[in-house]
Each structure stands twice: as structure tokens, then as C-alpha cells.
Length: 236
Ligand code: ADP
Ligand code: MG
Image (cartoon, rainbow, N blue to C red):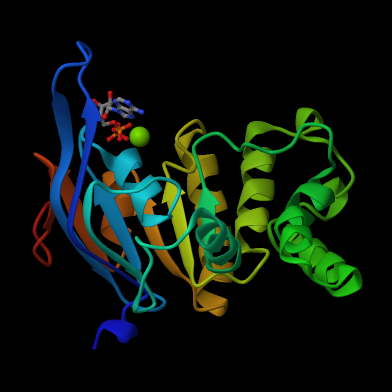
């Protein structure tokens, strides 16, 4: 049944006004996708094909023109902005290509932020934030500000923040797209260990075919639709 999917999208359509302001540019034209609990699924596709647009819709950061999106079986497209923000804070973790950390706060404070927003107890939250940062290799960096961290360290903080509220679903948009391959592989491996231990589903947008093949399933976004790669077939 529906409720068994961590995430389900059916017939999702999204368009933007064209540059002349006359017509609309259809970016997503009937996207279907299913993600099982604890499953790790990759989305690949050329630049400009609408991958980030799709991720924003699936995470409730933007709304589709039409179609259905369910989080753990619950239709979320009709929710008010307040409800959407609340549920997103509890159930969805985001990692973007750029970390979006708050510059005036320390690593620990940045990771704590989602729990403060949710109104969670401070000492328990601090313990979890510290644990996540330690697991991601940042035990010695808790009190550093983003500007005092390397690019890879900044992304680790963003990953800890994404996991802070024990989300059911992690949405990652080229999370290590600005790091070198070796560094990127290491960080994603550390993230994945935590993700697996906590049973979090993950949708990973990447142009790294090796990373994509490592996931449980792969979709390609082309001409506004998701096409699932056949098991064992090359993605390219
Ligand atoms: P990808 O992440 O696959 O590179 P995007 O989802 O960022 O692609 O963009 C898909 C298309 O939608 C691009 O042609 C882009 O210019 C267009 N687009 C994205 N966001 C907007 C927006 N807010 N307004 C108008 N067009 C947009
Ligand atoms: Mg993108």
C-alpha cells in the first residue's frame, strides 16, 4: 500500500514562465517515483534537465503545478505552508551542493538549529549534535565557524544538520559536487554509514555514475520524466 513508501510521486508537473513572460516552459511533465524505507536511490540527468527543481518539489520547498507527492503515505501537496514547514523540519533532511550554513554560528550550533526550530530539549539535542559531528570526523571542530572550515568539513556539518532531527528521508542535490572525487567518496561513505544505521531513505542527485551505480536503484531524468534504469544496464 501507499503508506509503505517513504516517498511517492505520481504525475508531477512543473513549469516556469518563459523568458518573454508569454508562455510557460514545462520542466517536469509527469514524474513518477517511489522510494522504499531505508532505500538509497540515485537520479542522474543532464544539466538543466530539472533535477534540482524536482528535489525542491519532493522536499516541499516548492509546489508542483499538479500531481501527487506523498511522504510516508501522506499527501503533502495540499498542506498549508506552516504545516509543510513543520513536517519538513521533522521528517526531511536536505544536503545541497553549497552548504548553506549560517556564518555567524559554530558547527555545533548549525547542527543544533533544526532541533531548536522543532523545540527539542537542549541537552539531548546537544548530545546528538556532538555525536553526529564526531561520527563525521569533526570532533575537533565543534566550535569552529563555517569560514574556519574546509569545503569538505563544511559539507560534513551540513550533513550532520540534515540528520539532526532523525528524518525519514534525506534529499541530497550533488552534495559533494564541489569536492574532489577521493574526498567526496570518503564523506559520502561516512554519511551513508550513519544513514544506514538510522534507517533513513536517501534520494541522491549526482552526475557521478559510479556513485549512482552504488545506490539500490537509479533513475534518469529526461524530457521531463523519470526513467528507471534496468538492473545491471549502464546508465549512460
Ligand atoms: P538541473 O538541476 O537538472 O541542472 P534545474 O532544475 O536547476 O536543472 O533547472 C531546470 C530548468 O528549469 C532550467 O532550464 C532552468 O533554467 C529552469 N528554472 C529553474 N528554476 C527556475 C525558476 N525559478 N524560474 C524559471 N526557470 C527556472
Ligand atoms: Mg541542479
